[in-house]
Amino acid sequence: MKRIDLTKEHHSLSEVLTFAKSEAVLIHSPSGEDFVLESADEFDREVAALGASEKFASFLDARSKETEGVPLRKVRQKRGM
Image 1: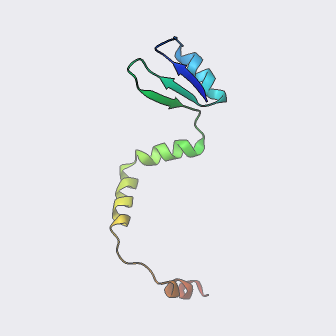
Image 2 (image 1 turned 180 degrees about the horizontal axis):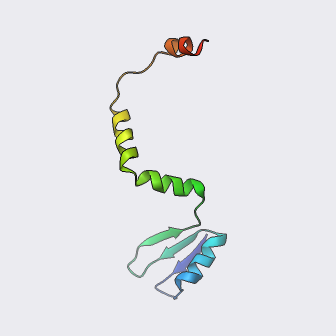
Image 3 (image 1 turned 180 degrees about the vertical axis):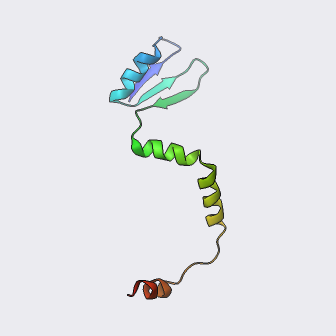
């Protein structure tokens, strides 16, 4: 992981993005906060999209409130096992 301390050196956004193409970058900001920047793959983009989806959040909320399960016997019956 490459470390960039913005309190000690200046890098353009373009430079930082170039670093992030090959490895994750830990950025220490002048305000004292740390950030990690790395390239995103298809899975990362899908996770971000689902995280921003109100419909998916509503679905998860409804599923978390379900109290009844399906007995394994019924699943096997339904699948003809």
